Image (cartoon, rainbow, N blue to C red; front, side, top):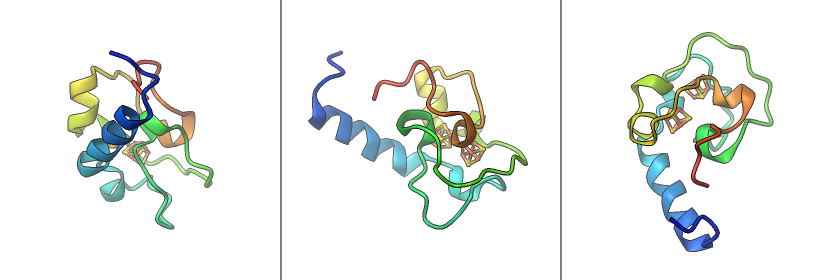
Length: 81
Ligand code: SF4
Ligand code: SF4
């Protein structure tokens, strides 16, 4: 797949936000932070790790991601965007 197309990037990001579980996660920093950290990169806010819901998320499963706490560490190496 062509990863350089900005339209595809926008669509992928939009779909992921529908399924992202971060808002229900005890580690989520709040303040309307945009989430989908696995694809968009880490949060600019301070993260206090509690637990991570990513392994229960459809985006995580569909992409075959293996990591957790993307809000703290940044996007998955397999991220398409
Ligand atoms: S894998 Fe985690 S960061 Fe990515 S969309 Fe799902 S809950 Fe959000
Ligand atoms: S990336 Fe994981 S730990 Fe961070 S807010 Fe999302 S589900 Fe929670």
